[in-house]
Image (cartoon, rainbow, N blue to C red; front, top):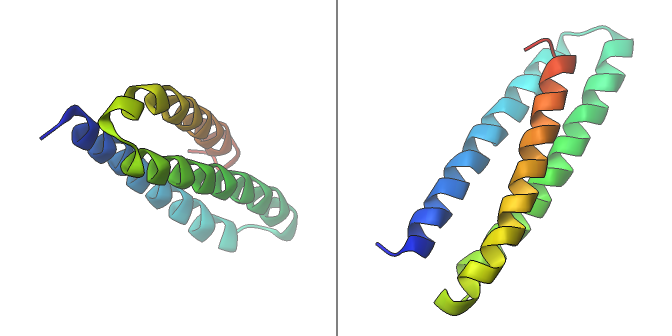
Length: 96
């Protein structure tokens, strides 16, 4: 397996774990007070936007040649770091 394929698997696993966390947040938000739901839904929306951006970059990476892979890897890393940061920030609002 190439470095590119291994990296894609790693990022996909991170994406899947983040998606599962967002799903937990959604379930928690449904049981919260109205005011709390508003804030929680804002956080969830932010996370989903980051996830969409990450999915887009991952798709670009999948389509990239081996030569372009190293160049694109930095951009993907940047987006995933931002996504993780947003997820961590949201976790504080959700009490996790």
